[in-house]
Structures are given as structure tokens and as C-alpha cells.
Length: 122
Image (tube, rainbow, N blue to C red; front, side, top):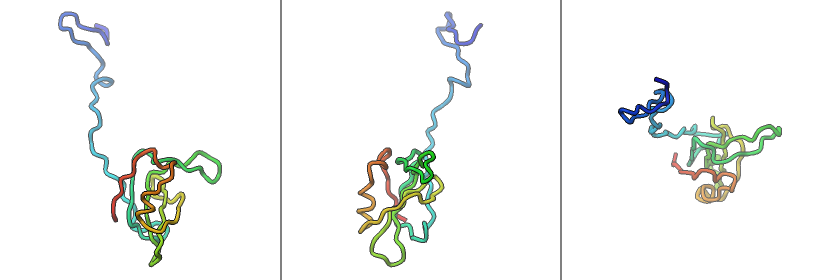
């Protein structure tokens, strides 16, 4: 009997196993944790997404860089903090300075809102 046909006597469809009998991936994704320091600054809080939060134009005019990690960091005893936008390997692509960690987490630019950020304390 040919594949992808209905067995009239049983009323069941016959389909190739490899294509149609896959179970959806239901495993929980574990966020990729950042290093303790980025660019010499201590990581205070971070967010990770397997899907990019957004993209940043590359310096060389090549394809945009996908941002998978966001980190709020502090250099030494400085009062202000920095939010680093990082690629999939936690390499800093862009940073911005803020007066507080709360401000850095709450004021994400529109380009980083493709996926909601879930923040974790370091």
C-alpha cells in the first residue's frame, strides 16, 4: 500500500513515522548565565533569551547582531550602572549608562522589546 493513504477498513491514516510522529520539544530552557564580570564591571542583574531581544547594527555595516543577553553592571564603587547588550556568547555589543539598576532594567529601548526580559539577580 502506498504511503500517506487512508486504510478504509480501519479508518486510520498511514504516514511516515519520521515526519509526523515527532513530539514537541517540551524541555524547559535553562538561561545561559553570564560571567561574573563583563568588560571589568560586576554583573548585578541579567536577562537571557534564546530568541533575540532585538538586533543592533554592526559597526562594519554587515548583518545586524542579535542581542540574546542583557546585563546591568557596575564598575568598582561607581554610583551609576551600565546596561550591556550582549550577543549569544555574552560579548558586549553596546552599553548605556543609567543612574540606577532599576532604571537600567526598566528603560529598554524599543529595539530590545521583541521578547520580554525576565531579570535575574547575580
